[in-house]
Amino acid sequence: MQNLYDFSILTGAIHESLSRSMSPGWVTFTELVIIGLVFLLFFALLGLFLVYLERKVCAIIQNRVGPNRVGKWGLLQTIADLIKLLIKELIPIRKSDKFLFNLAPFIVIIASLMAMAALPFAKGLHAIDFNIGVFYVMAVSSLGVVGILLAGWSSNSKYSLIGAMRSGAQIVSYELSVGLSLLAIVVFSGSMQLSAIIESQANGWWIFKGHIPAFISFVIFLIASTAEINRGPFDLAEAESELTAGFHTEYSGIKFAFFFLAEYINMFIVAGIAATVFLGGWMPLHIGSWEGFNHIMDFVPPIVWFFLKTFFIIYVIMWFKWTFPRLRIDQLLTLEWKYLLPVSLVNIVVIAFLVLMGWHF
Amino acid sequence: MSFNVVMFYVFSAIILLFSLLTITSRRILRAAVYLLFVLIATAGVYFLLEYQFMAAVQLTLYAGGIVVLIIFSILLTHHISHLFEKPELTKLLMGTGVAVVGSFLTIYTILTYPFPEIVTTTPLPATMENIGAQLLGVEKNGYALPFELISILLLAAMIGAIVIAKKDKSKNSEI
Image 1: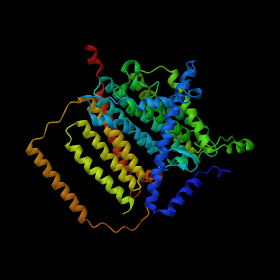
Image 2 (image 1 turned 120 degrees about the vertical axis):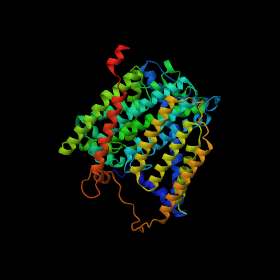
Image 3 (image 1 turned 90 degrees about the vertical axis):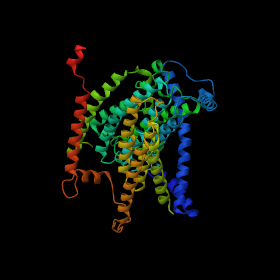
Image 4 (image 1 turned 30 degrees about the horizontal axis):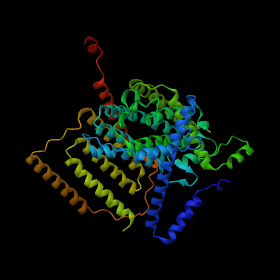
């Protein structure tokens, strides 16, 4: 049953057919190019869809209709927006540092593209499976903040600089809580490899198996990762009412679109990581000894499970943004250093004790 | 020539080129960004050696941590139009001389050192469990004592930083 939707058959067949006509080195090279193109296409489509989804979710929460003119249910609205962004003028800033100004959007977007590579979408559909998967995702996503800081400084504008400073302080502090909450599940599953973490959830997701501490670390992860991706209520870096648009005030056209896209892709990545680590990734929902129910759930393809869970978390993150008011910078830092960090440290100790005594399922 | 060798030369070229740019650039933030490229390329070399843990540590600590701190302090202290002064000729010559002698010594030592023949071709397992056991091991080749010493040193440094940064309440109230 589990082999029905195994993608490694497909990827193995591609590898076989390439190996017949090329030397191993060129096979690797061709596969890298194919994976890169697939990811770039996925990146663009996902970005378009997430922007549409955000506008619809926002509209529902605010009791409006949302985009509804272009295409059926406004589905083509974001494509029209994209065309508009592509043909807009790229305004050069005379007294800016041109090299860094142009480099910054690429650093942001490359960081999120690298983090995406480690996401397991389904069984066998996994670009690269490091034995330190969780740590790798954290490492490459910490590079994105460099792009934001550079964007703020090289624009030579006060709004941008203040936005970048806030964003830097925010991301550097909340990274700790993200790391500690992920570490909680690493302690439970005994591995940092994302595929091994998923395998360890075959008989139940960690959020259910790990008692209350796992749930606490799930909540901390949701809060901290919302701050990490600069989204409301933690969107101080681009607080419209005080900083115009924060660190990307001076950017226009496609360069602005890069920041925008990276922000949405980062939301997808943290939702995907949360789904993988806490909610079982592509594992179907199984309930104890309900044989019939479990068997029916097995028929739903793993990739559908992964996207269902991921979009559930994306919905929760959007719900945060349109419900809570924006925090002040001192409240933001107090929340992290005085509440989230001590709670997650204690939580880790409790989890280590639980695992030592063998009390988890 | 296999792709591994090609990638090694690519990473080395990036490291050498951007190291030179880091020290010759007259704009401080650009120098920091070139340093970032050097550190990322070093992480790439670790990935090439299949030591992913070290590569991830390199990325988090150096690229994501220290460079961010450097950029942060530049953001707080420097204006965008600020340029470094050109160094004096004597300083330049002396610095270059020291660098040339140092690199000559290093390369000479590496070339003449009798490295043992490679016995294994399969990479040694560098899993999380192995690294953790080694790091906190007390038997031969264990690193428990250095690990504890460094953690105490870091704790002392952190407490020191907080004490220095903390405002004196009694003084503040007078102002």
